[in-house]
Each structure stands twice: as C-alpha cells, then as structure tokens.
Amino acid sequence: MSRTAEQAELAARFVAAHERLAARGPGRMVPDLERITALSHLLGDPQRAYPSIHLTGTNGKGSTTRMVASLCAAAGLVAGTYTSPHLQTVRERLTIAGQPISARRFAEVHDEGAALAEMLDEQARAREGEAADRVTYFELLTAMAGWWFAETPVDVGVFEVGMGGRWDATNLVRGEVAVLTPIDVDHRELGSTPAEIAREKVGIIKPGAQVVTAAQQPEVDAVIDAAVAEQEAVRWVAGRDHAVVGRAIAVGGQSLTLRVGEREVGDILLPLFGAHQADNAALALAAFAAFTGEAFDRMDDEVLRHGLEAVSIPGRLEIVHRDPTVLLDGAHNPHGALAASRAVGETFAFGELVLVAGCMADKDVAAILSAFQEAASHVIVTRAPTPRAASLEQMRAAALEVWGDTGVVVEAATDVATALTLATAVAGPGDGVLVVGSLHTVGAARDRYLPISEQLEDEVVLTPDDEADEEAGEDADGLLDWPE
Image (cartoon, rainbow, N blue to C red; front, side, top):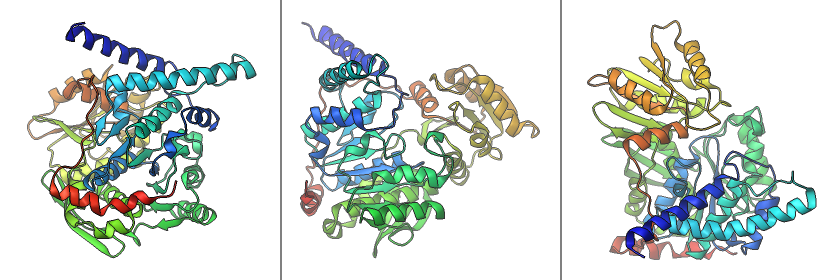
C-alpha cells in the first residue's frame, strides 16, 4: 500500500470512529455513574492506575486545568490531560505531555472502548427494553482518556469535569487533589442558585483530599466547608493559602507575583490576558503545590515560572489575526463575559470594538451581551454551529434589548464566517474584533484563521532532556508516592 493510500485509510478510520462516537449524542447526559462505572470496570479501572487532580467550577476550569498540566510538565512529570469541550477537533480533549491524541490512536482506543460500550448497551436493552439508556458520548470519551493515560503511562491525570461534579463521568478518578474554580449559576440542570450548584460540584471531593478553591460567594463557601468537613479533607482557601500578590500588564500578557503559603514566586510572565487569568494562575500553582507536597518546597522558582510561562490556552482572549486585531474568547455565561470585557478594556487600546456573538439557546443571552454594552461600538450576532445554538432571531432580539436605544448598530449574519467578513470590513485601523458567546462560535472562527491539520500518525511523548528539567524531575519524585 502506498504512503498516500495508507494515510487516506488512517484518516477514514478516524472519521468513522468519530462518527460512531458522535452517534451517541454529544449533548446527551444521564445523571448517574452506572454506565461509566461498568465500562471502566471492564477496562480494568485504568483511571485508578495513577494519581489525579480533578477540577470543577463554573468559569476558569479549562484554563486552570491547562496551567496545572503545564506546571507538571515543567517539573518533569508526564501529565495526561482531559478537557471539554473542544474547539476544532475532538482530539484536543485528550492530551499527553501537551500533545493531542493522534488520529490513529484515537481510532484504536475508541474501537476497543466502543466494543465494550456496545456490549453494555445490549445488556441494558435486554433488562429494560429499547428505551434503556446507552453509554453516552461523554462517558465513552472519558473512559478512553482514562485507558489511554494508563497505557502510556502517565505520571498524573489532570481531569476537567464536563458538567457539575457528583454525577460527572470523570468522578471515578482518584482525585487526590480537588480544585474548585469560581462557582456561579450557569447550567440550570444543576440548580438555580450558586449554593445549589455548589452542592453538585463538591461531589468531586474525595475522603482526605486536598481541596484548592478560588474566591467564592459566602453561600458557596458554606457548602464547600461542609463537604470538606464531611470528607475529612484539607481546604486551601484563596486569599489565605494562595493569592495574586502583584500584577502588571506586560507585552504579550501580564507579569505576576504569586503566593502559595508563605512562598512567593515573582517575575512570572503569564502569556494570558485579564485579572481572572492571574487568579487562575494562583489557583493552579496552589493545586500543583497541594499535589507535589514537600517536593514543591524544593523546586526552584524558575521551574514554576517556566510552567506558567509555557501555558497555551486557545480561545481565551487569543489573538488570531492582525490588521484588524481579531480576538477569540470562549466566554459563554454572564460571569465569563464580564471577565472578558474587563480584560479587553484594560489590555487593548482599541479605537472601536466590533463584537461578534453567537450563544447557546439555554443561556441568558441578554446578560452575556450586557457585559459588552459599554465596550462594543458595533455588534454582529450570528448562530453558533451547533443544534443547541440560539437562533438568529433570539440573538438579534437580545442584542436589541441591550443596545436598542444606544445608537450602536446591530447586524445579523447567518453564520460565523459571514459575521467575521462583516466585522473585519467594519473595523478600521486601530480597531478590534472580539468573538464571544460559545466555544462552538470560537471554534468556527479559529477554523477560519488557524485551521488545524489532523495528526494522523502516533504521537511522540516528550521527556525532559535539559539539565534544569532533569533536576526538576528529581525534585518532584516524591509526589509519585500517593497510595493507590
């Protein structure tokens, strides 16, 4: 078989695997752990083979997850990272040492897991009839991640919760460290108040875990404290146990001084924008310290700086084009939108800001757009490329509710590509274009400016080879002594 034919066959196998996975319904959720528990057990419970850091929250968990993984890499540890959702390819969700799973390995791991999932589906139908719940898209993908990480193997798993925590498929991980980013109202399925939602998210706290938390509302703090006490865990509190001590705008991001316990690490150039990302960095550093224990105290500051300075987070105030500057941000709820708006205001001196927005139908669209009411001088609404998207009519009505009496022009575009063409035509020299509202919208915009090329062959897991990283790895050896 020629090389070209082999590559075509491999690409087709990946597409077929992804289509079979997608047929399970990416948006379908069933609030129990029955199927993922059974599937993981058939695979040998691979998620128990390595210690893990488990992250949940309403905003910032994706960014914090990637920061934790980057710190692990700087310390010489191979981290398997599981995140969701993806922007451009499902392979983004499963990475080892920062490298996404290859198309070849994705298809192999999927086919093995799918065979077991189909057996469980058949057993469920035999017990309960044709209406029985099948293994979901997210459950199968989570099982694939756990198995791939164990097979490689990794030193640590870093798992981002899909939604909630208690009934999330990721909640089978060991979770020696639990991280709770800011908690607020987002998914109504979890509750209508921050406290109700917190009760679901604290479900990831395991007995005796180290629990690292962002600044929370008082009612959320009370829920967390109760869960920590019930599990006899240890809580690391924002402001007391970790904090942003200093912060200044810098070229390409911001310069930070962070504190964990009594230790301060300064001169960190974080290549991300906004005070919220500085808070995420402090949270990530504290989570890393909680995980590494005494090894953290022996690590050189330069290792920690390198870990945060090397972080890359697509779709979080990411610059993808110049002249005009086009920014992408995955803000998809009012809290995240406000953080993005503030970050743009403090970082970029745009003459005018053209907003491109496409949200989900189940979100408070008007509240999301309201965060940009003062910042935007021209608004283009569109429909995110997903069946769950808000309609163009819903988006336009919300935009008119926010800007109807302000003189700001509101336009509608049938898709993201058309919206970007309109936006870049409107923007003049010194102006900016900001794309927000949904990761689906951001992914479509990224496809236009930074199209991906599928990695078909097996990936190479890199190991540290310079002296600094080798020393870091030796210093961090003690963190691998977690009991199984």
